[in-house]
Image 1 (cartoon, rainbow, N blue to C red):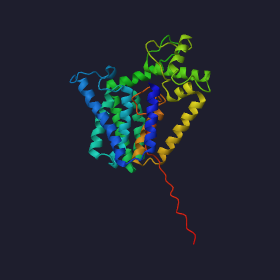
Image 2 (cartoon, rainbow, N blue to C red):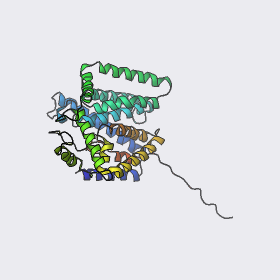
Image 3 (tube, rainbow, N blue to C red):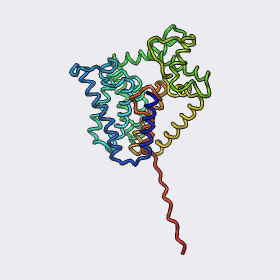
Image 4 (cartoon, one colour):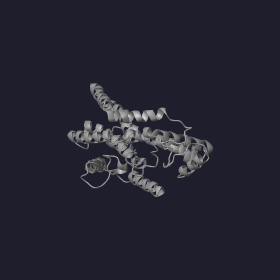
Length: 323
């Protein structure tokens, strides 16, 4: 299934990189992305309030048909895009950007998606400083900082983040079992690093992370995690190193560098900003989530590679005819 998935992503990337793009198609792509999130939010509200008979994914309120981690990352991406379009009004009028942004921000607050929440807190101030000139950047950043501070005064949000911080403090690799969210992630990262040192050149093989970590748990090299499947190292870079070794990790980093440089050079173009914001989430979020694979419904980086990014055309002058 994962092989078919990855192949389809590669086909999409090839199509996007080779076929001619038109501005209206890029606008349509982004509108469909935003529309999908807003439709899911509407369904999530109706499902949570009992109007519709369906259940939210994993029983988490206001998530709709999305997993809470993926949804938080997608909303963070959308909010970073809306920050750009609010100023440029390239795709939607300012009132529509503001309305969509407020709806999605409200949803991000109530779902248990610390990954997207943390990334938004980290990336939005940077985006504001890049996009808004003069005093506006300071005022907007101050308003955002006050909003974040205000959110932490809410008992539910403060307790949720403090629980994650507490999980990091009490982590102990020698425990008989690791049950906390961060404990499982750290255990997966440690297991991935151990795999890399055991198979440094070519790794344990694509798709073999889970079977390899089961053997490590059976040998009591790392604690067991009953009832939890660790099919990645909860870190994109460690996952690549563990599964594909130095060769795979080197190619992976080269690809990220080449693609990121292309986006950055023409970041003023709308499609480049859309891709760059996703790319930033991918780079930083990959430090504490396995975004290389594992989230089958996530917008994969291959699709972004297919967008028309920094395009340069060199038109050779016509050869002068001899007199």
